[in-house]
Image (cartoon, rainbow, N blue to C red; front, side, top):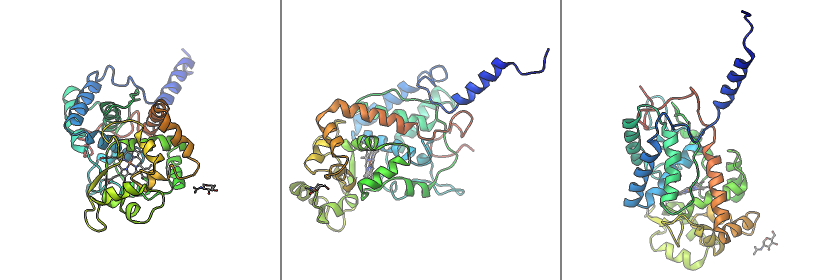
Length: 317
Ligand code: HEM
Ligand SMILES: *[C@@H]1O[C@H](CO)[C@@H](O)[C@H](O)[C@H]1NC(C)=O
């Protein structure tokens, strides 16, 4: 026998290493066939008891993916060896739903031990939340693994803030390989959920010229000039618990809650995309699902990288 390696084996090895960076919708088909059903059932129950939870779960996936990729890092509590993301400015006192993810994780672990990652649970829960609130569905690529670390500094630098300009938003998304249409479409997630007074106070009291006067007045009732920082307002003033395209029709009448919402329709380059999504619900659904899949593909850990956490809030011991 010759000692030269078999050429077809080389091809297989090359294919396997190329494929290790890829996610696949059928990743758990044989290793944990009940995973998707368990997640969907739990998300539906959580949204039934509190519609806003759907919004919180969508945001959790976004905040995971934008910080060092979709690796479940946002779920890690602080430890002696690192300061995690939960105390970072965009997350502190604001991200929610970790208890729902923990509950799902417990159920999935009972069905298939150490098989389904927390990062994948977040991605599927985000999709199921959108569907539970009446929005479009999509097939979620799977096979992400969980990080063994988290970064408060990256959460602060890579998650855009509500005071961002349009060009700052474009740059923050481009850094994640998401283009301007993706950015406008993903911002449409603000068709559900709530924001705290501290995040829109400047806009309603600061003399912004691009806010509907009656809308600003109505917001002041529950968002005083000082105090009440945590008081909530709906991001979509018309249909807050329905995943539809009302976010964009609101922008057309200058009823975006955050500064970073209204800059998307402010006599500038993204106006036509906003008009398109406002008048064409199908165009929004299509752009949103495409962009969610792109966002879910940001720098996943795959193959033997990272780990499958047993508990989403802490690294395996
Ligand atoms: C474009 C840049 C973005 C900025 C500046 C931004 C900023 C914010 C802020 C400040 C809040 C309110 C947080 C609070 O007051 O506690 C919020 C809520 C929310 N964001 Fe964003 N966001 C952006 C993009 C996104 C994206 C891409 C998604 C998902 C695809 C998303 C989903 C949500 C959801 C669903 C809520 C409501 C959460 C809840 O009610 O618990 N946001 N966002
Ligand atoms: C919109 O932008 C154009 C070009 O920058 C400018 O000429 C026009 O005055 C602006 N219109 C409004 C209403 O601000």
